[in-house]
Image (cartoon, rainbow, N blue to C red; front, top):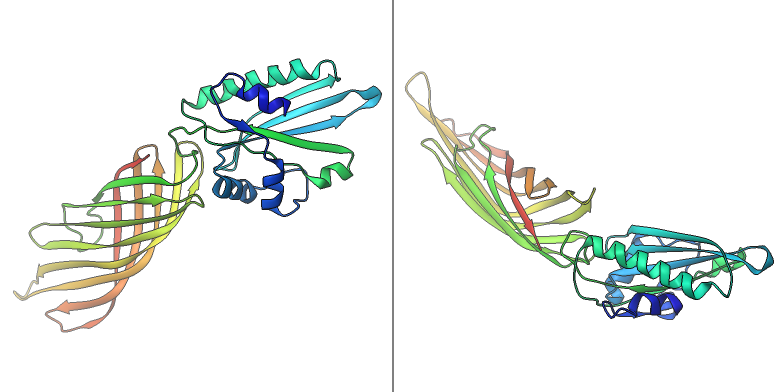
Amino acid sequence: NGLTSALGGGGRFNTANRTNDINRLLGDPQGGNLSERQMKNIADQLGIHYLCIAKINFGAGGSFGLEVQLVNAAAGKTVTTVNLQNLDRKTIASSMLNIGRELLAALGDIGGGTAQAAGAVQTPAAALAGRGHQASGSAQTYKGREAERLNFYFTLRYILPVTPGAPKWAIGGETGYIWHNNFYLGIEGGGGGSSRNSTAGYGLNLGGVIDLSDDLQLALGGFLGFWGEESYRENIDGTSGGHEKIGFVGPSVKLRWRFAEFSYRLLIGPKHEYGYGHAGGGFINQFTSGFYFQW
């Protein structure tokens, strides 16, 4: 509770000790640390952005050490850690204030916002080792990929003419949401053409997002919908030919760095060859580059 008061004393954040709520949610957690999945579950179920996990290490003569870890629960990442040693009952109050100042400074470096919730955790396994764990927390919303998920995104893409049948000019757009568990779902459409080639389509994109760093993001998923590609050519003997492909489903990978996105996907569906009468299965390979926005 002392740490809770230190963080909320300035009035900038709403704080609360929610040890019991989190223990009930985790179902008697074991071990001294929370896993990334447990942190994200806390963020999703309790609406907590940040956890402050305090680890108390008891020493000889009644002294103890205090380690406070500020965790972005929604992203499952540690923001900062503060360590103090050789504390006693007389110095604990002032130490809490110093820890509170350092954690608030770390939150200030991330960005401004409004507080939403707070959290706490107590791990029984740590008590068996002679160490009590207790925590309080503060939370804050801020713009960024590490904020609590439920983010809206929009992407504008240029379909690169690097594969056979791809037109010189074709663009596409996608918009959707990324949920708390990093699952994304979006709708897209696009098209374009040149003198001999054309493409167009629409559909759903879904999958998962992995934050590789603050600026680098990887999205793995797939496409479900309708995307067509048509290409014509003139043969040496004076005849004409070409093909028509339709992609209904296929995997995709997208690499995002800040506002830039590069992607590849393989769409699977039927194919028809003009001039030869051949029909069967076919593939559409698409490479794109574009701009990605998330808020």
